[in-house]
Image (tube, rainbow, N blue to C red; front, side):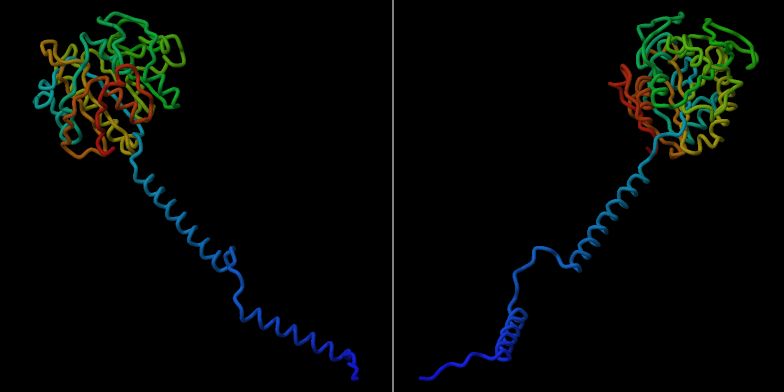
Length: 328
């Protein structure tokens, strides 16, 4: 009977080495299970693709924002008295009015909202006539555009020709730094609201025309005296006054940088029941001879200003058509 001899130590080591070599070769030849994690090169490619997409999206958003028209830098509103559309537009006695209408934009279907004068001025800054049907002094408590501007941290001023200083609340006044002429409270609406008249800091923003500076405020309401507004004097007189005042605005950097000058009348001639009045929109974005046929009123003009600066609407302006501003 034969006996098996035990393996030597050297033989055992050789067997183990052979088995290890076979195992290594098998791992190289046979495919392993799919990995759920991307390789470093795949991660790098995905990251680059995601970054490129995000950069393109941000670039597009920035481009859209930069090309979207911004609101006006400044708005000036000048209000004249008692002329119908046809008494100004096309009238040889108003050459400067017609020059501006040819250079800029003219709203051809614009109308006043009330009789007599004062309710129209109230409508322009509060969106309502406030139940006023006369030209007497009233103290009103309704909110106004001026309140909205303060909340929005936008500045405002009222430049009323021949108005005395010191928060004057009288019905009329004459002379002063502006020279000959008469101021009428009924044509200056801010002083009729308690939020202005009872606050010295706010009512001091109502000054005479000698203090006029186109850069003084974001919103400026400019009121000529009884003669220059055409209330007591001729259309030609008012036209000459405008030809002296408007260039101070139109030649300013405040206007060139995106401002808008609005020029209108409180109401039509008393014999004109249509209340059809001129509305000139002098903007550096307006193409010469632009005509806006959309129907609008003083309430719509207020809505236009509110929309331009992202302000909420007031009273009847909420249901009124805003005037399309050229280039915006």
